[in-house]
Length: 314
Image (cartoon, rainbow, N blue to C red; front, side):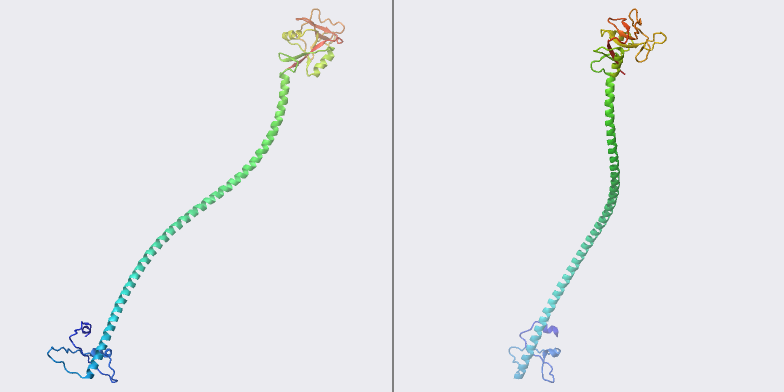
């Protein structure tokens, strides 16, 4: 029957519905739609439709309106059902899209988390290495600090030693200069002195007796000349004039001539003039007279003569 309702209506037919009647005389097509009966009132053009009463016509019109209303409701319900289905489909598609997006985002977050975990591990390992390196540097810094402290102490000690050595060097320099001065005095002749061999000689410009001449030479850190070779004898004789030499016999014993030089060495080589020494008037001192060769002559102390001083170089 439902298929007959939704079927294409045939406008050439007349439809009549017959429903049951309730006790309250109220009629509703929707209350008992299964009891509807459809009559085919189609007649040929020549036939005459059966006559109906006025009451029957009114009832038929009411039943037709009820059927039309029910059909519209069914169309609305069908459209609503289709719309609901579309909404469900759209909702399902939205759910699927959301699920896909969720899965993609979850995978992305998992990958990101994995990368973060890896990076965290690397950073943790790097931090461990940096901590180890920091500890090494701290240890090295402590060692270098201690070494620097030791070096500072050592430097201070070296500075003190340097100052001490500097002072010592200054003292040594002073001593060196003094020794150099002494050496120069011993290896170089003073001003106005004449060097011959390993000695310096100076002939006086004034006369004195033998004893005073000896003292003057000693005051000048020298001695009356001692002649120890033929060459020296000739050199002293070249000064010309009568000069005292450092030879005396003051220590003569028992009438024996005991000539010796002022440094205490005995006489070994002599250059006496002929007839000398004659020992007249206690002539205990010796001069070089004019001329070359053998020119020694003994005289007493009261004679005034020039004298020659000698400094021996070391």
